[in-house]
Every structure is written in C-alpha cells, then in structure tokens.
Image (tube, rainbow, N blue to C red):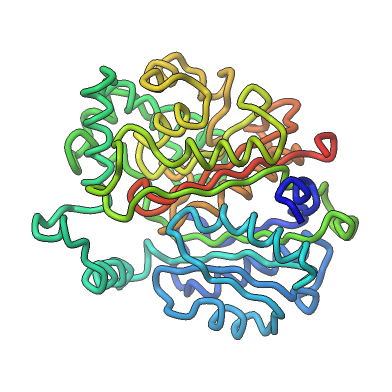
Length: 389
C-alpha cells in the first residue's frame, strides 16, 4: 500500500477527556481510564472491541502494559513509541498503518497525567534527564526545556526583528480562545503587558510565554473508514500525515529559526492533496509562544520571518482569518506534560461542529501539529470532514 492510499481510509470515531486542570484525589491511570471509556462509548463501541492500544508516558516505563492491564483489554497490537509531545499526533499515522494492514480493527489512543497534583512528577522528569544527559549542554546546567526554546526565540528576534510584544500576542490570542472554553484551566483576561510583566523564566520568555502544567487525560478511537458507521457522532477522517526530526539537543539543531515542520508539513500536504490555503483551522503544539510563530512559518501560512507580524495582526485569535488553538492550547487550556492528544480532540470537535461558543463556522479541514523534545520531532496531520473524502 502506498501512503496516498491511506488518505481517508481511517477515521477518528470517538473522543474523550477527563480530569482537566486539577484532578486532586485521582491517579493518572484513573483519569486516563475515564477518558478512555468516554472515547470508546463515543465511538459506539465497548472496551471489549478495542484490539489496538497506543499510549506513551513520562512516568511509566512500560505504559502500554500498565494501561492495558488497568483497562482490562488484551490488544492484538500495541505501540508505546515516544517522540515526546508529538507522539500522539504521530499515532494517527501509525494507527492508520496498523488498521490498513489488518493488525487490528479499533485502536484506542490514550494519555493521562496528574502532572500538576502528582508530587513526584518533576522528579520523574529530572531523573530522565540524569539517565540521558545531553553531553554538549549538561555541563552548563540549562533550565530545560525553557532554555532551549528561549534560544530559538532570541535567534528569531535577532534575525527577523520579531518583538517581545509579538511573542506575547501568541499567549493573548490563546487566552481569548480559552475564555470561550469552559474546560480551559486559565480564563482570566490577559494583555500583552501582562505577559511582558510576568516572571522571567529564561530570557526572553516569561512564565506566560510558557505552557501550563496541569492534570488531564485525553483519548480518541480510530477505525477503518468502512467501520466508522458505529460511531454516535460524525467520523473525522485522516487525510494526510507526515513526520520528521532534526536533532535531540538544541545545540544540534541545524537552524534555530527553522524546524522539521517544513518537511512534516510537506509530507502531510502531499498525502492529503491539499495546501495551506485549504486549511480552515490549526491546532499547533504551543509549548512556548515561539512555537506558534515558527510553525506558522514552517507550515506555509506565512513567509519565514513574518510570523510575528502575522500573529500581531490578530489573524489567529477569535474573529481572525486563521483560527489557531481554538481550545486555548497548551498556553491557556491544558498541558499535562504532553499536549499532542488534545490537538486531535479539539480538531474533532471543530469538525463535528461541537465546540460551543468557540466553534468556527464551516470547518471542513483542520491541521494538527505535534512538537516533541526541544523543537526536535515534528509531526503534522490533516483531518477532514466527510465532505473532504
């Protein structure tokens, strides 16, 4: 099977979330299970129908085994490949390959974390850093990941004249979307001056330039398109996907102002037979404000160096010409250690027309983009309504 044959051959048929924000008193497996059950029910299936499982974790060594045991499923096919926060967008493509190969019929993709209320979450992250120190950077004791993203932001400012105000506008735009989303963790009004005046984390990034640390679980179910009729809501089809990576540590990044999204986007557009002008809504992994500017440029929505001005024009906020992160993103809605699964969930809601006050009119295509490591792994996926098949 060629990659182009995969386009529209599989669908997301169910979605679910649980424990968003603060899930005090619950473990990550408990909120994960609630999200999984909601997604499976939304797909019109029972847990007994799940024969494929995909999950990744910062806190579990063998996550697919732990999750399968907890959910009491015995999948014929499992995948716990971890490329950081991009993993859950990457799973769209690998699940499509497994479904088309006949390895399984219904794949559950699920993530859960109590990163905010779990006391030892930061210790897990520090331990991983100690087990896999980055040899050219560890001696300088960077405050990662913020330090690495701050380098990219500073370089973009130096090369293209991008301003702190333009970076701050990314956070302000995300907050405006979050104010329309009752599930968003932070909904208070936010101004550019608020972002600039907030606590400095790693120059030039302040705390409001950085994603949240919350609890939360998200899940979605995928089946082959010919089985999508079981779903209780409109199925959403995978039209195209692509992945690429350029480095592990930021000192290995070939160009701090250009990410591998250039290549992942090219692949996704080619598989879908679409181009940037065909995309209605974007769901971008906004771990830091610089991410959105880089991805807008690298995915072809504006020229290199013009992302800051594009954001400052109001294009990505409610009422703008290119809605971005309509749930509030990782900057204002939810970010429990990994955010990628929520890009897919919000894309499905927009394509179904189920996003409430934040619903964008006449959405037929949504681009989801995942980012992993320190601008290292990049995965792009394009989802579409039945009208795009």
